Image (cartoon, rainbow, N blue to C red; front, side):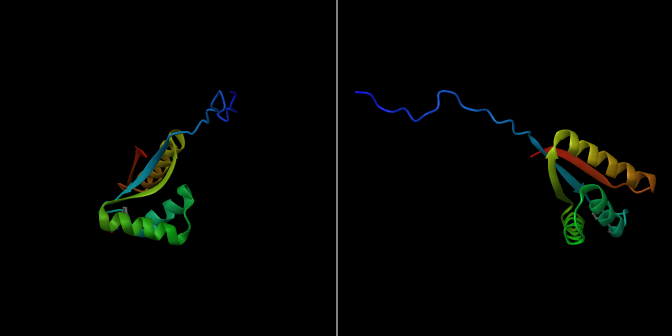
Length: 98
Ligand code: NFA
């Protein structure tokens, strides 16, 4: 007796890039307004999102900003750290596997 095989013989492999979290780290020196500015400019958050992320990091010590493929996450974190550093602020972002 022949049955119909509904299973495909080969699975199509989809390339899903591993995602990495960019995490905003609190400090005692970087002005809140500057943190919000960076979150808007580098991470494309809107005003409301930027305020929530900044205040969450301020109160809890850290907050996930967004997730990206590894190279994008590292580039954005580096650019944000450098922009803060140029103004003498110790602002830090970390990049971690999701
Ligand atoms: N804690 C900083 C302040 O009170 C603000 C801040 C928030 C810094 C989030 C870094 C990250 N000025």
